[in-house]
Length: 393
Image 1 (cartoon, rainbow, N blue to C red):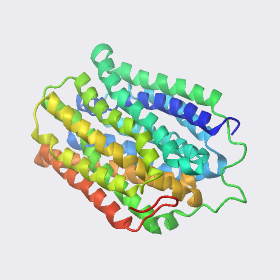
Image 2: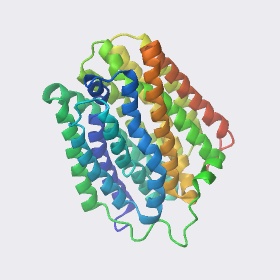
Image 3: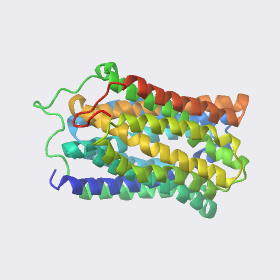
Image 4: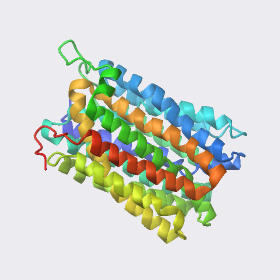
């Protein structure tokens, strides 16, 4: 890199954060938009899942190619593609068409955050991996936290289509910033002298990688129920779109606030403890959501869930970053991110079926059980894990 690693991290964090604001704007709107176009619970699940189907398919491939060809070109291509996709959201007059839009949106998204995470890990000094990963993830989460609040306000005052155009405009602006200010790599990430990039099979046979993979899958399967169907629960409680945006925004904003500090702690304390405790607590808070009433209580539980996830997320990123230095950084990031996407495929489809058959409360109850299962997967597969330079406690 031509600039210092800290300078690149700042530019990368600012750029990705702005892009995530755009993505977050449409987050609380998609389920409502689908219902307005005539979708039932199962079809809403398919529409949400389509985004993550393409992420699961293309994420590992994008990461592997990025390990060989470099990061910047992938990030720029993904951001400009976001801008184009935003226009496609306003065209459908039937809910089924949103499945295809979401699929292509997911395909472009794998070129942005996972590759940016790999770039942050590439440039991180050896003893500051957690700090760098936490800083970038803080920007991602801040963007996703601000986005739903803006999305609700934009929809209430300017209409549904304005939210989609806002997402496109922010993505285009961010693409220009990355193109202009993030320096390109001087050489490919993987060269003849670099460690061999492990195959996908080798990665998933590794006990620690398998543990992280399963944890992210179960956690996503459970949390997806909240992020997909909380807007519908809010409608039953007569909350406005702005209030829904505030609830989701508070959840993600608190995750963001903890990323840098917990990431820094994960450089000194075994990160598996943060993953286990945070994931378990998150599952408990999800369990209470269908049994409370009113804006204040839903907001309170989402604040607690955000705090719990804020402790859990940095640890997984640090462990992935440590292993990625010998397995292929973006390749491993792509595999673990695919686990999250796979969970997000299962969650909305399964939750949509549960909603249609048993009601909304059961969606959150089963989601809670899945998240707690993810906590158990970490405890089992990482029971003997001790990272380098971090004493086991």
